Image 1 (cartoon, chains in turn brown, cyan):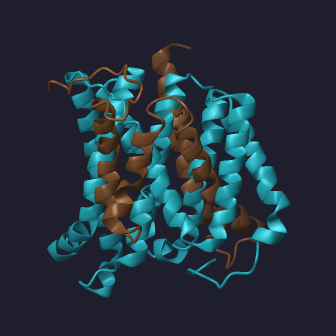
Image 2 (cartoon, one colour):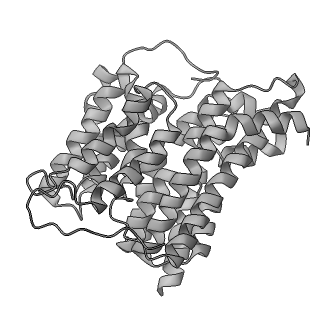
Image 3 (tube, chains in turn cyan, brown):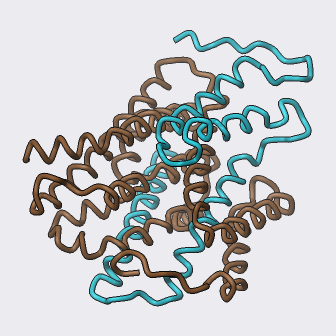
Length: 124
Length: 237
């Protein structure tokens, strides 16, 4: 399979499965009063478990024992709490968090090894 | 289209606009930098998938050339929460007629939150138009953000180190929102612990599928403890 076909099929699989997931309750429970308890249970517990899994997956390459010791990620994780107190308006801080880590990574602020090199800002 | 309804939907969607444009741009830049795909792919993905968490994960999946079966299973796992959103909207969407097929497709975390919270003041008959306008505005912000980011990634030499944190930030926000409800904390703990365990046993490249299996086993084993009765919420649950 060539790469273009692979990427196209991958996108179609993701799109189809995602739409089917969204459609599922309307197709299966559209005319019933209450879905089975087991479905409700799995749906309720899988969601936070899967998201926690993805958080761990995202930081899988962060090494706490090697400079910069995950400090940029730690600061950016707390970023939005400083603005919202965890109460709600999530979009502004959420959008700034990645750019915060990007900045911290640029300036080598947390390279405590003494071997870090200054990475320039993009010329654009 | 009733101008008053459009104006109300637009004002409601402003916070989402800021988030989607920025997160979409981060996704577009990452997709271009990590996979070398051109902006048309970004357009296709944002138009047909419309799921931030999955699209960010897709960058890694495509870059790592995962099999289509693995991609399907991971999609199911990552996005399963959407099916729960639908449960509380069955009645409202049923009244929307054929428009419900698009409303179902456009049911993201943010759109769902707005649909639950916001109702149009224009009039009771405008509810369907309001939902449709809100959903399509949010969709358009996401598409614009993704494509713009992808084009920027093509045009500008970008060091993306750190931008991939947008994925972590997105998941952290969703997780924190979920963990405000006490009953979600133990499942989240099971998810985190199982994944960490699999990271140590199987390594970063092979951890996801065993982690998902372990999470399923964990939530089934602890069902009695986790499935304590809750007060009924929504229309159907």
